[in-house]
Image 1 (tube, rainbow, N blue to C red):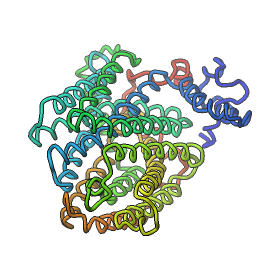
Image 2 (image 1 turned 90 degrees about the vertical axis):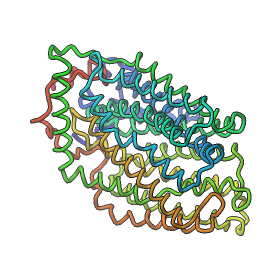
Image 3 (image 1 turned 60 degrees about the vertical axis):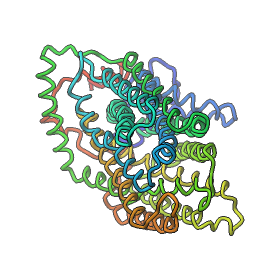
Image 4 (image 1 turned 90 degrees about the horizontal axis):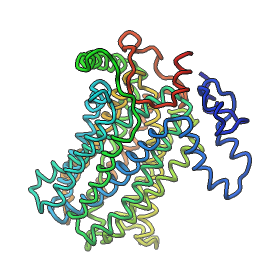
Length: 518
């Protein structure tokens, strides 16, 4: 199909024309609905209404419950919980458990174990239906696990470090299971409706950033007034809503005459063979390797910087509320990164975009060194202004760097095992993040950065930035293709996949039937 497929949503009939919505994307000859809106008027009102028109367009082309699931999982479960969890647990380990920053880095690495297990969750959601449903039960399971874990660590007093760590891992496990379930829906939609893949990732990024903004803004306030431990009770709210999502999301129940157990075993074999067959393709394993290395080589220095931020002697001694504000403004900047990608960068080839994004990522990291060495004060720039500016630049660049990687991941998923394979790719990314956290923890330990000694923190950050720039040597692993191009053969699993498809209804029924007739 032509890369200009992103424009195939008929200009003349308008967004709400039922006859237009009943046609497959591939049969609609016109322009993207938002293009015609932009050409009609550039008034402030039209600019204000554009995001709502964009959501209306996505809801008309995709199942509305899918949109609701994305908003809930990415906005509340990942965005709010992730940001709130980050700030509150940093203070929990620092003030309640009194752990060294290098040890906290190792603990944070363990948070990613549930994310590394995403292929297992993906296999469950793809081939092990419960009572005929593939998606609903797993949203409920994720919610129950997250609720119990959050309430345990928040309400049972000071727990042994191992028990507290297990509960916090349980919270992240709930988020990971919900994420892999909704990602299966996103991957499938991205395959069936290629023109909307960047829009879906923009929606995910926007919801995640807005949720993170709310989480960061509220985290400092609740830590200050409730304390790090009691504030964790708020992490039980998003999982409770995931349980609700498991009941309201639309899903077609399986009516297969074969026993579910027998079908699950057969589908499991198909999925494993399909994953192995797909990963052997050069155009799949090369970008997967790049995504892992680009994350692993950018070692994390977060805990060292956090302890320095809040230290009253060596650092600027930022308050709990101000730390939350720093991250909140960074979340707003992340939204700007989503807008920049959506408006200006989603049509650039993968390799060109990722090269310049990685270059900016490495260069922007030098701002941390300026701050740690307090050169900003020599230049007459206050700490508060400089750290907020640095956070904004870092978040914008990180978002621009991350989004094409996610779009690329959806392009590598074969239809039939899209949930499992996308989970595998995200597992690779999580493994890269774990390697980054542990690598940073080891460097912090070797260079003797502790709760009170930050003399070598600048050197740790310099090593991180050199590794980021060194990743540019691996850019040849990324394909030169456009973001709407097919990267793997359409019939890659023709010999291994089954003909049954009893999964979640992800597109309007009339469009699905039209696609089946083609």
